[in-house]
Length: 638
Image (cartoon, rainbow, N blue to C red; front, side):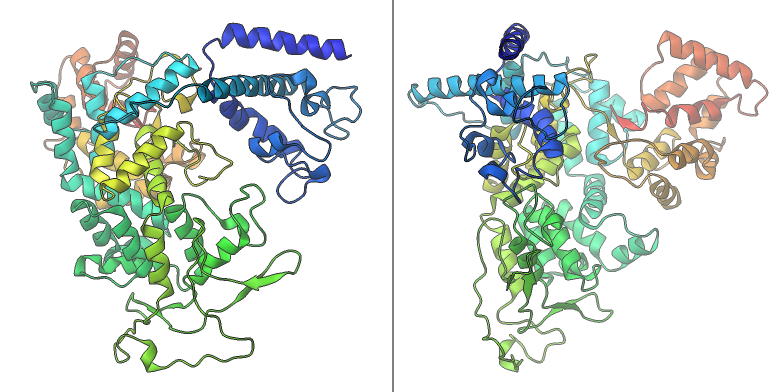
């Protein structure tokens, strides 16, 4: 049986050498994330993980696997046949893992391939150790230059050929959707296509970043990222009325540094009239300090901490129960001040203990995931704290400010020299603009989810912080990169994390509503239509996009869309209805919806449809346009 296992490993090695001759150290990380970690999570981590380590063996991370257990090494890099982790998976092995189960041959092959990749890692590491340090570290003049350099290196290491660059027409549509929240008008597209000069893309990006449409679009995105959609109508109206929307819009319009944005939300004591709405981040959560902590963590740490409420995080070992309750403690002296939308903070109290599953209790100190702790003297057991006027900056103020504020102390540490804050924002904006995070999913930036391009994420985060958290510089760099400008390409077998092709992204409800208005030749903003589309299609950046029956029904039967697509003075449907030549009508409909001409098959199908609608008052123009603007092509970023 041993000979069979050796033969199988040799076969895997031949396959790897033939098909992956250009493989690199990134192979093992990719295999771990995509195949090995999910396999071990399903079959092994319950007994060999962060919470329990039978035989002192932890299979939670590659580093833990490499350490082995009380019985010795679990893997020998480059030698699956000598690695117990692989040997024990064989059908007749004794001991056999997993107990009373048998992995498939494909799963065993994945483990073998990963161990072989570890051997290549070790060889490359040894080679690097013998090389003198580089005298010319990589220096880049802009985010776009860094993005292209690091991603292109990844293509070379993976042996991937990127898709060709997209054409100007598609790029213009893409960048308008991403920066203005809508497709361009026919005039805007024409102006860009016929602009001269090598910098026409840069010029358009700079103009869009400075536009009111950009600040509104960013407000819409970050309203959802920070607050969720909320209940239909009521939450939206209250956010608008209480200045939350204004706070976001003004901040993006003025290009306010992101760390200042976050500090104002956490402290909730605005220093200017335009920042008054920052309070709403805390206020809307209505003194639910756990909900506040769970909302803050993805912003300042880039990861959710919900799973650490009752015990240390079962999978991401760096997230402790103390971090969860420490973040709760940062806000547990806070209380909404009636209907004023202001958030009070007491100078005393909030000293609580938390208990784990073993019934062990410890104090909830304000502790950050970065390792920092907000130092504060705790009262002795049994001591009762008295609240006095001298504990406050102005004891007679309507909303008193404590001289020592937990919120302010936490906010200062969370927004100053906190690399996680910059990484979290960079990763989320990258995912928003490119279709997938460098760390994916974006709210799980922990050791379990390795970055696909760690050097790129580190460089962009460092550059973002070094340039005072300049949001426009970061976004402009991404959309001016070669990577952003790739076409979708025909080869869908390339892993999305290679960023070797444009990834399809579903439009937000706001992008859909505005773009429908533009296609129909109307001003982009219609509040009634926007609300109706949001109600049907509320998701923003869903992890997995699958249209629901309700969404399909809305797209097929929406009364608001039907009203929009009726002939009216000056609108697109009226114009199409007056085009006598059917071929021209089809071409103009495609130009209105997609800003491109139909191909031969599309032309033929559209003509057949119009022929079936000859008796319609508009000659079928409205229904043709309806079909186009509810198609997958229209509802995704090109």
